[in-house]
Image (cartoon, rainbow, N blue to C red; front, side, top):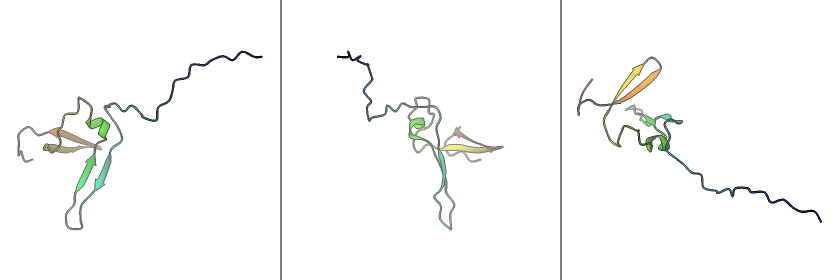
Length: 82
């Protein structure tokens, strides 16, 4: 009889541990109509869950185009127009 070696193999769970992260794949989506243009930039859930994410839902932001980059910053003053 051959002795069997027991291997310690971690039990795999079907649940993935999802932890906040600093970057991820977002998406630019056109939600406008023929009359009004509306472009949304979706931020991945795990990026927005990161403790360093600087925005709250509904907060006004300043959006600036610099070359091929889109810069999104907190508004310096409420209702500020550019």
